[in-house]
Picture (cartoon, rainbow, N blue to C red):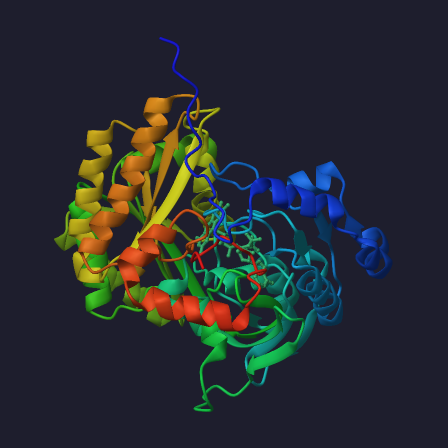
Length: 481
Ligand SMILES: Cc1cc2nc3c(=O)[nH]c(=O)nc-3n(C[C@H](O)[C@H](O)[C@H](O)COP(=O)(O)OP(=O)(O)OC[C@H]3O[C@@H](n4cnc5c(N)ncnc54)[C@H](O)[C@@H]3O)c2cc1C
């Protein structure tokens, strides 16, 4: 049967009262001469560049900006934002464009500020274990530059994202269970506000009781309050010994209970990632691996050689008590890199399960004691939906992802995917969890933010209005004003 062409999952409604025709008229009227003069060939309004900046990895429809600039420093960002503020043009910051909730899509057109050429590591202190980078430096670039210092930066979303983008989405990754998320690892920021003013928040001191925590406010604000141009980060000593393992379980419940007990006894695992059997099938095919298709944990231990051996032994006991066994150790660097590389590529492995399909990559987070119930209930909902949807997660934090692979040309599948993604969030919220552990709200989870935070969203709205009265900063994201 030929399916009816599916409706797009998300439509953006105007919240400013501006009609689409008025917006189109404004686009035509925008005189970009001032920005062309400042940025020269680092200004572009070509269709290809606009298109590149208006497409997300996931299922959202394309929303290109009207023009793109590539600043080199804070002053140039401030000049571009001041221009937009004077003209009443929307501004969308762009890091590497890997966010999954339509976070950087130019919902109201306007100017995209691509920070990728702000790629300088400005300062590294081995004595204080910190550094300051321009916002466009990526996590892999930073770690390459740190290699000879004996330090590293641990936050590792699957993509090689920019540190400005990671701060803006409050990103985390496989190491967060031991080293924390961007929330714990950003010490200070340089920010361009909506009127072009430049402020510095936080600083290099490890503790400060000085005033409101503006760093915390901007971390996770998804470009809706200002543009981060520099980030000061915590660094860590490279561990003396690292050991990684794959542990197979008979049941999903056994694997998740092993995680819960590992956290509850305070075992300082550096990484503990759950992959369900379908997820294992996907990475076996995509990354040419040969794991048994069963509930599996990928683990890593950091410390001294003796400490690592002790942690591995303690985890072994927990695993055995929960029906786990069959450890495969990745002892050399090459095997370890291959293991985590496969883990980081699960999004693409999942898309490859059904070529030509799209994905909703949702993530939720619950208190660790509810993790087993939440994953089991989610698994049942997936089975009932009949959709292809592997479960994978940073389970040590109570955080897991479901990648809902669906055929966008099937109205029925599209609707089932949408219903299931909402069900997954509802299950987590009913267990005192969060609608997103790390991907952010973007366009897709605005309604869930209201369910999760209720009247507190009105306080967020007041903050947004105070910092961005003209509503130009990444409009239509996080909250509707
Ligand atoms: C394969 C894959 C795996 C992933 N795995 C993870 C994961 O494990 N954990 C995780 O947390 N995320 C993960 N993500 C999502 C994504 O990598 C993160 O959201 C990341 O933080 C986005 O960074 P970016 O540089 O790509 O930012 P972008 O996607 O370009 O932007 C993200 C948001 O921040 C804003 N923004 C960007 N730069 C700035 C700035 N300098 N100042 C202010 N606002 C800014 C944008 O407007 C947008 O709202 C994954 C994505 C992919 C494709």
